[in-house]
Amino acid sequence: MRRVLIILGSMLLAAGCGSEIKAPEAGSAGIPLSISGNQAQTTQIADNSSKKTLSQYPEAVRQLLQKANSAVVAGQHGVAIEALSQAIGASPEDASLFRMRADVYVLQGENASARVDFSTAVRLAPNNADCYNYRGYFLMSQGLSREALADFEKAIQLNPTHAAALNNRGLIALTSKDYKSAEADFSKAIDGDRKFADAWNNRGFARLKLEKYEPALSDLQQALRLQESYVTAWNNCGLVYMQQEKYEDALTAFSRAAELEPMDMRWLSHRRVALLKLNRFAEAQKDGAKVAWLEQLNLLSQQASRNARNPASWIIRGKHLMNGSQYGAAIQDFTRALIVKPGNSDALTGRASAWMATGDLQKAMLDCDESIVVRSSQEAYSLRGDLWMRLENFDNAISDFETAGRFDEQVAVAYEKRADDRRESGQADDAKTDLQRAREIRNAMVDKESSSKPPQSADGFDPAAGDGASRN
Image (spheres, rainbow, N blue to C red):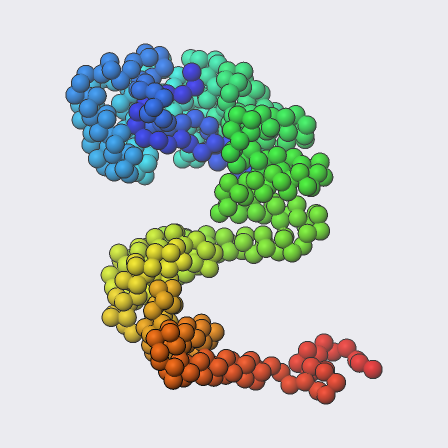
């Protein structure tokens, strides 16, 4: 078997490889973490050699494993590590327990501790191919390719049909641009597990690099038959179609990849190239703008990571996310800013705007109120005016708009709406006053627009638009 299934968590390693933009990542190993999968499908918790099931553990250890499982699902990695440490104390010779704890250490970013536990699992089960493969994957993810390769070689020596180890060894060959060796390893991995979608995808990518386009496409399509939502396989199909100059097919493949992962600029960059080949320039321009937005997001993310204690870093990133209509992510960033500096008025106003965009008007109003208490700003009053409009409280909306010094179409509509309410309640004179105010605002907007236009000559020639060419 390729996988070691245990009850902890619900995480799988990212599958697939193959991009013209960056080298295949270690995350494309195509094997699940020891903490894996679907509790409804399995309660197997041991390595593949012993076939030890959860029920074969002592009751105390079984309870600790269940506690660790719940903690991982809840994101409480420290609690999971403590529970697994207690389980190890009760069964210190069980390699699978060390492997489980190593995986949680990886989730927590404690890579040194993870490496110790993976190595302990290897020491306790020196004839278990899975233990070597898991440690090899971890080492590969850390960029230690030579050490990882030694582990994959040992796993394959112990089990020549170990599909995951063969796949992982193929990935190392890919990073070395040894595409023939990679193709051979992926083929062996497929022979070991015909349902191994990652191996089909990876062989397809290796064959793409070897310019074997039809076999590559066949492999990638098989990967998609096994897993239709396999985003990297869709991208790789698009790359093959581009080489074959089948640009419509490439566009379809890249579009599916972008649909599955809309925040990954690689698929958008590739789709943009396909659109340009099809002379669909307006659509290509939109993809180019989205790529530029994502590039800026990456830059802001790096800056926020370096300056995590500076609320301005999160606020700037949150506003950028708002510009990209990523409202949930923006809320998270504004909240991070507020954790760093409670009561930050800019963060409160930004989060209020994001709440309003998601339709949560109550939370938006609370943030607006708090922001105004902290520091009265035109932005906060203007935003609260929009909230009152959504709540159809036109008196409060107009009051906030006036305080903000805002006079635009939204404000004119507010006066018209209040005029309707006043007319229905018998306040005819007040209704006329509101309608007159709405007209004044619109007239002022027209005058402002006209005054902002550059002067034109009698024949319609705009001197500001001159390009240096002579006119007869």
